[in-house]
Image (spheres, rainbow, N blue to C red):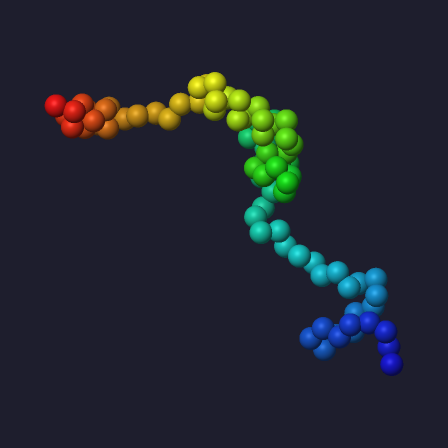
Length: 79
């Protein structure tokens, strides 16, 4: 009897036991530096880039824009 695994009618040798697994999502460039992102720090490439982005959020460098219509609606609600 041959050594190996039988998978859907095919014989796999010991060195070919690993299957080709597709990643759940495609690799995207890091939003900070443009290098390919890593699974561990997704969507960033490293802990350094992840922490740089976090520090920008915490310091207020990033802001979510508010449309004029939303600002008027909030002003009318307060009256």
